[in-house]
Amino acid sequence: MKNTALTKIHESLGAKMVPFAGYNMPVQYEGVTAEHLTVRSAVGVFDVSHMGEFLVEGTEALTLLQKVTSNDVSKLAIGDAQYSCFPNDIGGIVDDLICYRIKEQTYLLVVNASNIEKDWNWIQKYNEGIGAALKNISDDYSLLAIQGPKAIEAMQSLTSVNLSEIPFYKFKIGDFAGIEHVIISATGYTGSGGFEIYVKNDQVEQLWEQVFVSGASYGIKPIGLAARDTLRLEMGYCLYGNDINDTTSPLEAGLGWITKFTKDFVNSDHLKAQKETGITKKLVAFELTERGIPRHDYAIVDVEGKQIGVVTSGTMSPSLRKGIGMGYVPKEISRPGTKIFIQVRKKQIPATIIKLPFYKG
Image (cartoon, rainbow, N blue to C red):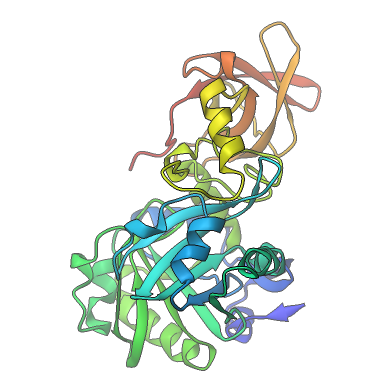
């Protein structure tokens, strides 16, 4: 089990530590609901240093990325970030990721912790005939997600970069908390604004300390992975291993917007044909209309009592105070407003398919 560079700090703060993707990670500090609401109303800090980072460089970097990712990397200017996925060769998804264009011929890929080895092998396989320079820097870097509506105001004193001028999915490289050449990215997995900050492992304790000093008067708190999950689910953001995996097509998952057929990429012919003929199942969002909590793998049932799918993600929404979830159902019954049921133990609880996001701020 690996530790992040901040593990001792989390333990000193009384965090409940759990194994996650091969790492010893803080799942919660004071409780999921309190931490969730802190991010929605103020500012919270997540240690997400378990995430993977790959550098792709050289004259063939763009060629490789256009081949292995679904989105159009050629559209990125220096300072842009892009959400994308690695399609596999059987119609599913190897992983989802964010691609940053750092320099003219330098890109940074940020991948899920549980998929670092799988993703690295996948990229290397397709690079054999292309020859881009690849470097796995996952073990060298730490990542803090500083999220919430007060993040800009709380962090501005730590940098000469004007944080309010970094648009969503853009980044700047500058000073932050007394550290030079920090990636300050206006990205996140919460839907409440904020930044993700990339620094080397030997710098992250300084970063953590300064962030909490600067944010003290704004109600800043450390936040665990459990609240990260409830926050992303309220926005309808996919979680790899739950809502997307090796068998789910990006089109079925509602990720057609990151699947660009203006270029040739892994399995693009198959996915293009799927788009033309039409998908048969679709990832939908639903909310319970009676009391209950939907959980991963609970059955989704139609009005006649027939199972039509399973819940891929579900929780009790701390913001909305109702059960919410996502799951795949046949396309013909995926329209918002459609009535379904969730099998919660021996009871079928009524639910309604809705349009995302659940939480609208």
